[in-house]
Image (cartoon, rainbow, N blue to C red):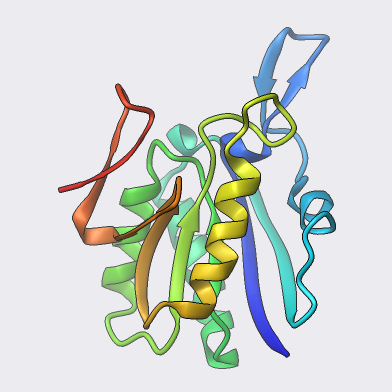
Length: 167
């Protein structure tokens, strides 16, 4: 059985609608609920909730906390999937790439343009594809979104198209 470590940091994929405030916000982790919907008979997912932030609010200290958690997990030899807000996903991915130049496993960053549970959400697709990519890709840092895999150093978010594109 293969193990994959999933670190959740928030972002749109984890957002919920607040009826009291009339806004979509990061309040609580919900990825585990969606993992239970997937049929993954030969994969053990170790899920770790690190933070629940919109990526536009992510600081250098937050990225350092992500780096430190990844450093703790790397000796296990399991691929790592990191759920992250899309606005600064590439920045965090490049930070990790520079922090770990000699990776022995893939690190996959993924998220969503529309929150999990909302009609038309891309979150479950991106999460599922990321788990598959973690099992297939060679060591490195990648963005996995909308059926595509991008080396983090060769992509950017295209806000007009609401997806990631090659650079």
